[in-house]
Length: 427
Image (cartoon, rainbow, N blue to C red; front, side, top):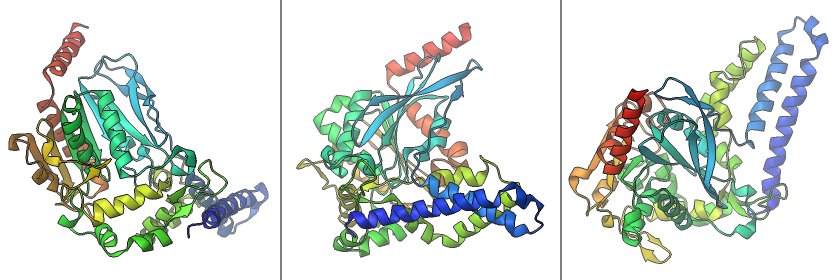
């Protein structure tokens, strides 16, 4: 599988399906067909519309689409997406709210690098913006990164996080969602030994596989049973000539998307059929529930082969972080070195990706942290997506996370919060 030809073949299949959808949409939307009473004409045009949109979204990076936020003064304030640090494999970005006093809560939201773009956390960012200065990691699509930029594995990922945390300073509150939770914990431990003054004030780990062996799921079973040789042979490919990363070894996003959809093929097939029917009846629209979900779900990115392989081998198979034997640049990272950072874990009771028990395992590794600075929460009835973007996040988890941040805010930040409140009342 490790050939450009197989990568280009997948892209050719995608382009062909997009073209077929576009052709059907154009042909069966021709005005003369308006005279036809055959419902299959409208169904064919609707099939073309849904098909074209679906396959087009697979190579389009979604926009953040966060234009404004309402502040305490009741006014809409424009939001600018500012790149704070630009690096080959990912940027640190800031959602800067124009004309609003700086928020005392400075939050670094660490987005997953697991096949989807950081915009998967759009609703999470929107929910935090009114109360926080929000920064997030914006990982790049590996197919667009030239081979000359070098490698990017789990150790490089940790060092990126270390650099971002140092840039933001010690009054930062870090929230890691899903995949980056173990590596963010390792980055914090790395700082605890190398630069203690740069550690964040608090660390919230949401639904992450700190110890994948604590509660088996389909994901952990796959990681345990498949061999590294099988993965290398069957899932890795070289980027084709169409993209700037031509020749780079990657785990293709299209291949991962096929795996995602195969796991719930009946659900997805029903959703697309229903959307075609709605479109044929004229009931579908640009921003309906189906399009909002699938515009994000179908937008996939390639991961570097070394990042994917090292994640499977070191995080899932060898459980290096769970066993506290993880190394960065040949130096062992001791989780127990964290003594000044408050840590909270959040899990969903019905999470079938990072099951309850996997994330809370982090607290047992924090042997140097006072128990009063540890906290955990299991959200009843919540699945994986719900604990960071759904109703459970908005109604229950977000308030708890903000309370945790406030309880571990530095004196200087508290003074800033008081000054902002005083200024608001003065108006």
